[in-house]
Length: 614
Figure 1 (cartoon, rainbow, N blue to C red):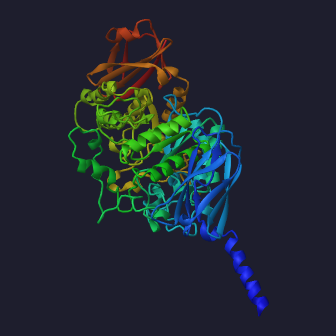
Figure 2 (cartoon, one colour):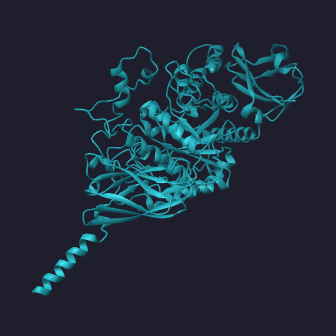
Figure 3 (tube, rainbow, N blue to C red):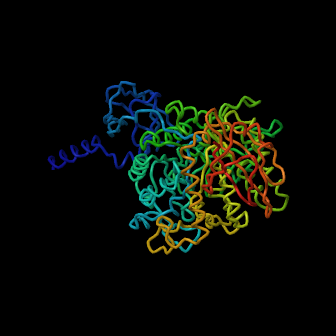
């Protein structure tokens, strides 16, 4: 009996000190970190039963625990580490102790990427695609155990099976098309019961949705894209999470999200931030109200939330060698936090590209968020680039609806005439449409001629162009039918597709003509420095004719848009002599013809001409 008691006592003592990682520590975020970072601090979010009652020590050269932060939830512990610049890659031994209990955890450190960030500039063209709707490269991940929504291609709002491998498999197509970068709609875990395909309800910031593939598959996608000269932009969301996020079962703190007695929606009035007369209650509702019932609004004023989100960006950049971030709903989170975030990212990775989604119709409001803008209230966003919705809306108005031809193209002239509001307008991302809008081709009457004019404008005016997947074959999509119809499957991305854009199989004559036109213009643009960085001079539109020039001290390109429905237009050199002086002929890029005499020539109705002047 005494022996039994002895062994039982010894066993209990042993169990008290044995590592029990699976029982005490469920996760550590970030899952790893990097040596050689400019900022030496790192904050770990440690989650596990009663882990907040533990103390922590680090056993690794150059790494020390600075402070511990505990919240009212004992299942979380925030560990502030200092990692010296001399620290070498390896595994940091972290020991968590509470009384006689202790737990050890190996925390990996790897070397951060060396060299400057590739970034994006106006020499690039971004190709926006939705992973679920582009190509299904791995059918084995179509349905994954533990994910609440399974594949259903018959449902426009359902999962269709596109994935990261499908994108990787078609990088050659994108390179040959002539784009230089890929922007992926969110691919992080989105374990929501429905409409999870769009990705904007994140349920784990550090995990690729397994129906798209693994984190490692994303890293391979970035690496293979770089091998082909393509850059990659990752879509991120800081404003909100999905209601299925693992936090929602056990919030790190009561103020981790904005909470109300009942569901409270944002007023969507981002103009309140810059409105000198705005009521504080309206500003507060804009920032703190929820985007939707299934999108809990994060409280970025909580410094723990700010640090978590900031480190998440830094981790993805360093871990995957990312080139850019597109930040969703940029004005909705707390503005000062977003300014600090943008600065932290670009300080750590100089030249790194960030574009913020700022959805306004007017340049004044859009420019408020642009880089180096000195706003009257003192706010500076530190944001490298903004989405130029004013230019987008101007192209829609220019080529659709009632009004004279001159009134139409005057919209383009007018929006660019307000570029004085932007310190650096060449940084703006410009586009015809995106995943949230009725497709341009549909909205403007399904006119191929109009598409060619509008695309000619987007690819030759100032800024960084972005194309939405399927634009090259004038895919259609009407938002009034539902967002799923804006995000149709890309033809050829699924086995058995009769139409295949990747191979050019069974395209209609209109689709083939649009594709050839787009590819020709994109590949011409690649080598035209004057389009990338040249100055812009435009002339007041007359009789439906809009003319502008991109020029530098070496070359000049003349762009002409004739918006008349049935009227050819005579273009005379005298009218544009200040821009044509010294040039006698030109090569017209779209038709491939030479204009031997610029004194006077004709442009047909509903036509764009891009003339490389000689």
